Length: 174
Length: 248
Image 1 (cartoon, rainbow over the protein chains, first blue to last red):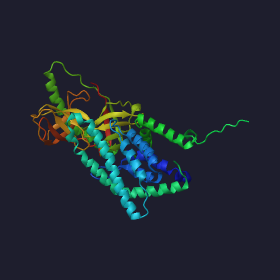
Image 2 (image 1 turned 45 degrees about the vertical axis):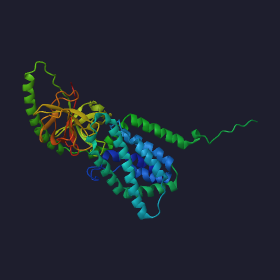
Image 3 (image 1 turned 180 degrees about the vertical axis):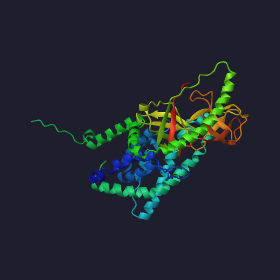
Image 4 (image 1 turned 90 degrees about the horizontal axis):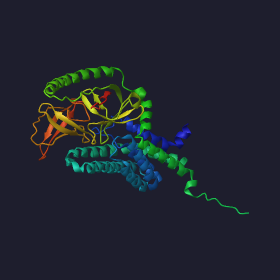
């Protein structure tokens, strides 16, 4: 059992993302906003497996998350695709302090990118309404999520990176 | 003897590619079924953690307060309707009590998932009320669960009115906790503290469901009046709700 867990850790942790999304723990919030959870998984995985795999997994993550939300007119896929490609181009860092800081910074930028793309979709969709200024409070969402994601990224990403690295050394899955 | 070599380098001969392909097809299925599998699975595993019965008493108390407000509205409505010859058919509703098993009330994705689905007779378009008033409308159902789009969601648009001045407006979610109430006339007489109720003119909701109170008014726009609305129903804290079918 433990062996299967070790070998299929990527898949198991991937399938936990929707559950985390539903659970939505309210004690990890900043201004009522949760971190952008999928980025924490995508960053270490893409660093280890490269851009092409990052692109594929970004697509899978986007599909999964889109299926969980009822908003059918805007999608999270483009942001996660771009992040997957970008994260795959980054190499790992040996210095533990710099690596932690790096995870925070990269996840913040990734979260900003994904949220900006979602925001721009809402903006474009409602462009004809001429009520665009009512969405200005949503900037708060973007920056609150950017902060909380960057703040928690070192903790989650370094744990996942170590686990995925060990798994990769044991056996290549994808 | 002629020996044919079978190439093993082609992509279709690789097991990994087939696994990826099957996984992709599975995700597509989940995407187009709007995550029904995930939601039903979450229903099963979250069952032991659902809120207990004591919450029901709090709910009943809050509903009593809400009913008082509603009663006042109904009396006014009755008087008004007596003066009108052609009365609109009042909605007869079936009430389904449900528990909130998942909620997303921050950022863009503002929805709650309830533990009642198609099996219990929940239909898309039904409206959901909690202690305080309207929370949103059912947007998607699976066998065991239903997803509710909250009034704060950027996709939510509901026709409302201010009973004091009988001014009709549109309540639009903005991705924050305070949806915006837009009046398409500049000279509408509204003030802070006015009650916002569902509009009798709405085709999506029955009339006079309490929604919120006007929190502040923006006078920046030249052609419209926009107000921030403080919602009476708090999806962040509510564990029990009622689902009502719309008959219009």
